Amino acid sequence: MQNGFVESFNGLLRDECLNEQLFANLRHARELISAWHVDYYHHRPQTSLDGLTPWEYR
Image (cartoon, rainbow, N blue to C red; front, side):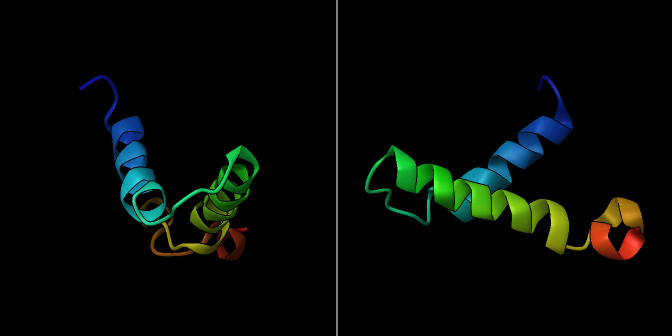
């Protein structure tokens, strides 16, 4: 294990996005991954923020 945080993120990305989608082309893949990224970093509660989303924490 190189970095637990990176490996955890990669696992979530793979399980919740990459394994769930069938990409038509590179542009489509970028759009879906970008949307997942925004949701992950801005709308999901984070345990490091005591269950708040980053927007709520601000």
